[in-house]
Image (cartoon, rainbow, N blue to C red; front, side, top):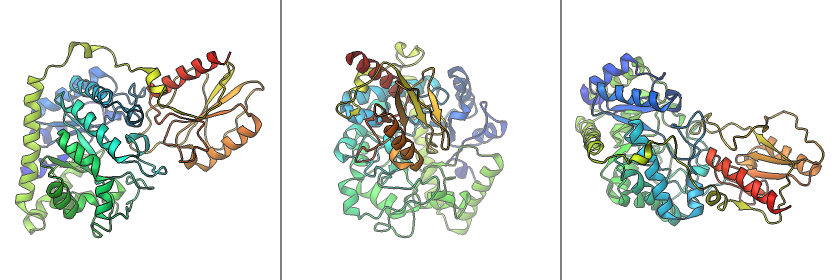
Amino acid sequence: MRAAAAVLLPGFVGTTLPEWLAVRLRDGLAGVCVFGQNIVSRTQLRELTDAIRAANPNALIAIDEEGGDVTRLYYETGSPYPGNAVLGRIDDSEYTESVARTVGWELRLAGCNLDFAPDVDVNSNPDNPVIGVRSFGADPAAVARHSAAWIRGLESTGVAASAKHFPGHGDTAQDSHLALPVIDRSLDQLRMRELQPFAAAIAAGSRTIMTSHILLPQVDASAPATFSTTILNDLLRGELGFDGVIVTDALDMAGASGEIGIPQAAVRAVSAGCDLLCIGTENTDEQLGEIEAAIEAAVLSGTLASERLADAAARNAALAEELLIQSGSIPIPEYMWADEPEFDLARTADSFDVRQGLRVQDERILVTLETAANIAVGRAPWGPSVDGIVRLEEGGELRIPVGVQPILLGRANHRHAWVRHVIDDLRAQHPSAIVVDLGWPGDDRAYADVATFGASRHVGAALLDWLDRESAGAR
């Protein structure tokens, strides 16, 4: 059944297109999602996407390039982009749009046509372990404004955007990669906060919207959003009027398939109204065969309406055809052939939240507090890239020479007990210590003398620039 393949978007292992995946693409697979581990260079990535397109000219080639902490193009080096939370704090919609446009041009050069970005969640919970600085902020109106700008910029390049994670993942204290978060908010409350950016994203022309694996018991107590007809059909398509492609977040996440397995999660997602199914990062031929078999069996048994499956496949095909046409009609600017984009360091540093009265010394040492990144960020480098930086893991010892100012760098410092303990001890021993939070800080800023609201390589460079300027000014 060709329609079963036409709704699947797997990942794979390796940096070249596996033959099994090429065969499936030739047989009508919707496309492929490229991850950081599939990329070693620009040239290699373009060769990979060319191979995908040779197997299926209408393939959707997706990537998670958020332009900040979550990066795939720069997974080995860290992102040269400021990131959403920084853009929200700068609060210049034209700047946000220009940054997203640059992301789009880079993706066009790479051969990708679908970007699983921007994250339009309102990060209302400072303890959120998976969204944080991926969000434009905690104010719904500001998030809506910058979400729309980002989408306009990306979509103008002929790359499809995907506003995520519907109907809003910002008010969680759990990571849906690992569990099923519950958001106990009414529909009216969602309309006041979470849904505002999605309405703006739709108005701005986002051609896809990604679902979240979260449970909203006041809206649908029986199914997470990805499996909820109420949330997808009644709310997203009906009330918000979205007529594009509904994409699932990865179905290998515990919040989706932890109890039922990926094949049944795929059946439930399509039945509820999803069109394009992200499967995961390291899928296999055997696994896709099991998923297709489950979809086909569901159609034969009447569990999944054949009309719903056909509609999903048709939506994906229409998007792919539209993107293929745009790839030939929207030229890539010549200036985009440079090595990588650059953004104003001082403008980013001006967005930092800095405690008054800080004094930066000439003699200082940078110490990164190495906590595990969330799965969406992965192992991409973070923070400043500089010789002599000390990396401290939990249980490690830290010795700072007398007269040297320690600059402690962490991400969401308030969320990690051992990090708080290290900071408290070091502040007692070295009153000159400065604590920098490159994640989303706690509301009281107790463990953030400087909050950068981002940990990309660009933000790290902006922090180094700020430290140099501050120490020069203190002389």
